[in-house]
Structure formats: structure tokens, C-alpha cells
Image (cartoon, rainbow, N blue to C red; front, side):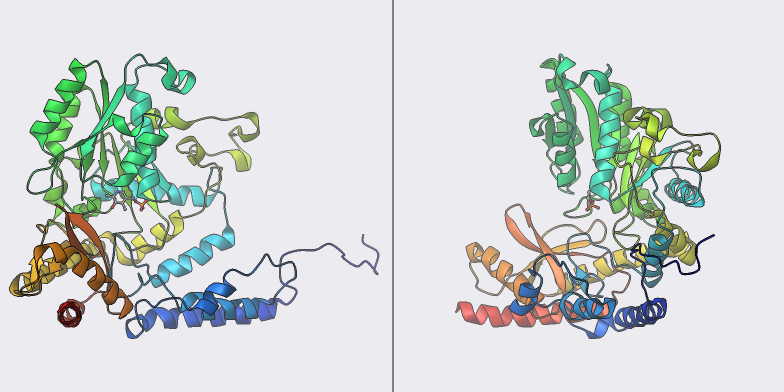
Length: 491
Ligand SMILES: *Cc1c(COP(=O)(O)O)cnc(C)c1O
């Protein structure tokens, strides 16, 4: 029994005034749903004013500030200057849009706040169920293991780690690379994403061990050149361990001939990893599924759900065909983490045995709720819609003499440039570079850019469930108008 005059002197981070917190929470929720509902009416992007930047350099706070005024700071200094990717005309890089229920799911996940390293609690079952659904939607091996990760880069690193450990041929976890007599090599196309090279570097293989094989006219890996490189490396005493196939390249959305890569890997006893960061999702759309043919033969697949499944950041996934190989690559269980058979430390699967993170967030919840909300068929329709929008934009570009398309449209990416009449070729790169900045600064749209064969290309990548055809009409007409303005300055 506590004495009746007991005063609790211990502090907590919970609010003293729960009612005020509740009122603030309701206001935030209303504001954020309003923001999403009206996003089309606001500028997609605007530069940060200097006073905002100055406030965002303020020093470490020592004294408390009320949640209400912190929220005002957020509204004034953060929410007004968005990246733009929640807007219907954001088509930069490969960036997803987010959804309202995804927002709410993040709040629910943070509320129950489980540590998803493992244990016996419902959230672990939710992540397992999401992984089962991922396998089903890609038609991948039913016995495969999986792990939700921060995104495609981490998903590639996890897959390539398993690849290296399995194909090394000795206990590389114990002996490290130092014990290897031969040099390991990894193969992918020139069009592969930079995260593949980063993974190869982090695995200690060195960037030079990554053979970047040339591509054909459709920007797919040149199978003949790959065979030649393999033969040459083997003759020189190298040990090829992995081929990374692209299921949707970042530049143009090209798919390698994944069946041909799977055949080579089988024949040569090489690990086959598929980087399907966004392109794997083509498997959800019946009319696009053929593009991913052969992907289900991969030993591991990496993909994102924050790109072409439109979920809020961060969420990606690695699937590994052989659960034991996946587990063996990462499991490390000191006494203080020993898994139990009963109580809260039980649980068949500890995700910490399948990846690099020990403490992990409940990113599974937004996937679980989103997939239930829409059903997987609707994702297929939206992906198809984005591909049709890319074809629509390509047709607009092709119909316009002052626009020049620079790559085939394999999927959802259109690369083009503006070519004003009479402008010399060697001015086109600088012209289009400046034009893209003006497109951003005008708050019109946010495409990004790439270089194709040395040509600066405006690159529109559509992983946006809010875009409509009228957005592309406006984008083309306004791009032409801004292009004319800029061309006039050149004269
Ligand atoms: C985006 C992307 C990645 C990296 O994924 P993140 O989620 O950004 O880490 C890897 N590969 C391809 C093809 C991508 O498009």
C-alpha cells in the first residue's frame, strides 16, 4: 500500500494532459487527410526560403516546447516544402506516392511499437503473412523465406550476401575472404542499379569484381557478351558466383532475358539474383506478366513496396528460395537473444536470423493493411494504368516535332529531350538540363534525368497512383512553352 500522501516524482515522456494530446492528434489527422485530398491543387515543389533553412539549423533543444507549437513548426517549415512525390505530377527517379491508409498504418505500427527482431507476438505473424502474400503474388517458390527490409538496396545486399556465402564453397562466415584462393566475380548489365555495385563493395569483393556487361538495343544484357566474359574469367582462374538479372532497369525499365540468365546459372552453378525493385511488380498485371518470365527461377529476388506498390517509405523485401541458406547466412544468436519455446521469447521465426538488423520496425503493418484494403488485383490494374500512361506520354512526345524520344518504352519510363528547331546538337545537353530545372521551379512537374549514350534525357518514371492523362497533356504543353521561352534566351 502506498501512503495516502504519496507523490509520484518520477518522470515519464507521456503527456501530462492527455486531452490536449488527443485534441492535437485529431487536428493533425484532419490536416493530413486534407493535405492528401487537396494535393493536386498545390505546387508540387518549391524552393526552401532562407529563413526556413535557418530555423532548420537551430541548435539542440535543452528545454521543452509544447507539442502544439512543434506541430506549427512542422506545418510552417516542413510540410510546405515537400519533395513532391505525393503529388500527381511527380515522376522523378523511381519514387512511390503513399496512401492515406498507409499513413494511418504507420501510426498504428508506432503505437504498438513492437521490435520485429522476433518473439512470439501477433506482429511477427503479420510479417510472415505479408511474406507469404509476396511469394504468392510473384508466383515464387512456396517454401522460400523472406524478410522485409528498408528498400531495394538492402534487399539486394541481403540477396547477394546469401549468394556469396553459398557459392564461396567454404565457410566464408568463419574464414572471410582472406581464405579464398581465387577471385570471386559477379555479373550484371551496364544498366544495373548502383546498389548492386555497393553490395559487391560491402561484401568485400571490390567493385572491379563486378563485371558490367554491355546491353543490346533494347537495353537488355547482351547474353553473348555475358557468356564470353564468363568464359574469359574462368580461363583466368576467377570464380564466378552470381549473376544479377534486371527485372526493370532504373534508366528505362528494361527486363533482361531472365530465362536465359537462369539457364546459364543452372549450367554454371552460379547464384541467380533478380533485382526487381519496381519491375517485379509487372507480374501483378496480367498483360505485363510475360516481361518477368524466368524471374521465379531466381535463387533470390529483391523488390520494393514503396515504389510500385505505392506504400509509404520504407519497405522492401528479399525472397530467398532456400530458407536454410538464407538463415545460415545471418543467424547469430548470443545467450541474451536465445529463442525460447514458450512465453514472449518463443516464436518459430526470428527475423533477426535472416538479415542485418536486430531491432526492426513494424513496416509489415502498412503492407498488410494496404494489400487487404485494395486487394492485389487493384495493384495490377494501377501498374497497368501507369504503363498505359507511359505509352500515352510516348505518343505525345512522338507526335511533337520539337520533342525527341531517346529510349524505347519497355514499361513505365519515358526518356526524351526537347530539340528546338535550329539548335546545334552540342547545345542540347545544357539546354535540357536548364529546362528540367525550370520545370521543377515552375512547380509544374518533377521528372528526373539520366544520360543515354551521352545525351541528357528528361526521364519520366510513372509509379504514381494519382496521375491522370490530363497531367501528361499539361506536362507536354507546358514543357514546350518553357522550352520556347528558354530557346528565345539562347538566340
Ligand atoms: C530503386 C532501385 C533500387 C534501390 O532501391 P531503394 O529502395 O531505393 O533502396 C535497386 N534497383 C533498382 C532497379 C531500383 O529501381
